[in-house]
Length: 212
Ligand SMILES: [Zn+2]
Image 1 (tube, rainbow, N blue to C red):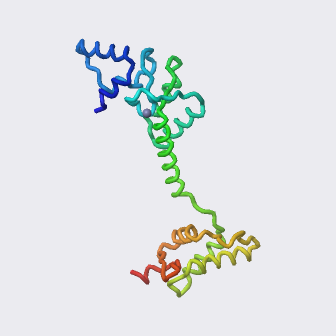
Image 2: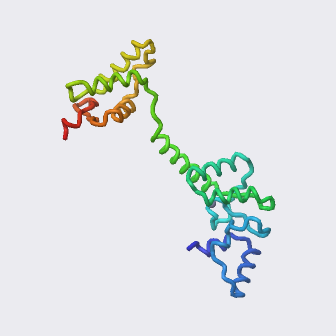
Image 3: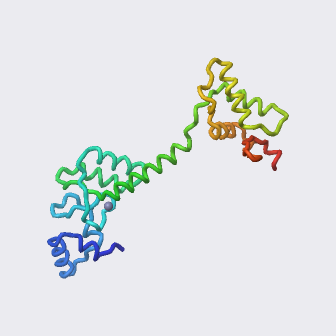
């Protein structure tokens, strides 16, 4: 239940008076309605935050630029906050609507959760770009070998050698990226897993038969 006392203290006195009158006359007014944005076209509404529809009617910033507006819409989509998206679209479509307001804190929180969502999404299905011929040769080497353990560093060296042989050497000795390279290979080698051993934490690919 929203805090009715806090909300009241922030709302304009005339509005509060109207509400009090209504309450006195027996009308039921839900506390949320006091500062709600749910009636954007009503002329007498107090401005409130489009993000939280919050009780704090102070410290509001006006959506003054298209940039802020498009950010809010884009972040609402990313975070799947469809109620907010609906409010933003309704507000834009309603020419009689008052300006849109937001709390800076709500704006920042929305941005942060949208960015977190995006980071999470991009860490998933996006495949790193490895050379398919070099990768195919490594997979064949590992699968056809009698060995059950391969050092990832050796496989990376092999990758670089194949790239050199093709006339497209890696530009950097850090290529291919160790972790991404290993993850990528493991997807292609379902019977293998990774394993680190020794003081130097030498990362290796190990056939599951060896550890199961
Ligand atoms: Zn807010």
